[in-house]
Image (cartoon, rainbow, N blue to C red; front, side, top):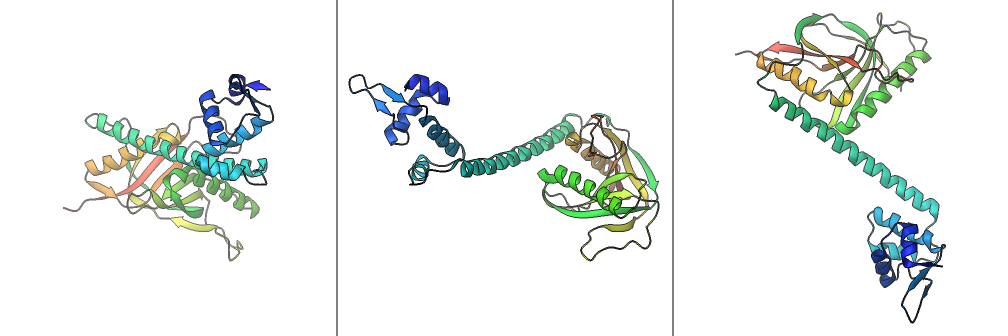
Length: 286
């Protein structure tokens, strides 16, 4: 048997908490010396201790933990693993949301700190022709899930074209069909450029693949961004700000064009992405 200090090292739990669990009847020592009051634990009790800590990390109260562990059939390891896996997904989602919020805060802060300085990007205004594309549309539930949706939609688009024996010329792009700023229910479209709209392609009734012509635009504000996609928010804000400063407003969906190739290749090379951001603009009527 193990003294309480040694058992605390095995379980990575303080002796204070072990005494607390003993007092509550959650984890009673196998033996307590009647003369010295020393507590002694067995190696078999380590499993119960791990269950207590795992359930506590899941957010359960000590009373709830006691109710679970004191049932006739002690909580199976497989069930506990499933509960912990769900909690891990929840925490990962929370972390992704916090990282996305942090990126937005940093982008706004960058705008404030450099608002009186020349733009770090070379922004040009140009016209763009129409473009035949294959695309998939989706409604992204929350901004934190944007990367996942862009990844899976683009990969699905390539797969569907291959299955139909169709080729593409590029570029790959994401269109953001937002009429106003919001964090939820974000309509996006993953596109790949084609030589032209294919004829005679059989589409099933439930096939989500779309063939269409992106319209031409006479006025488009554009900049080139090089860097991680997670840090692209500042470039988007700068492009929109530039349009406003020059008395223009967005007149169409923002286009995120992947000039360095697929944004989510099957075999990543680690190269820094090169993205062209385009937004159609219109002169503000005074």
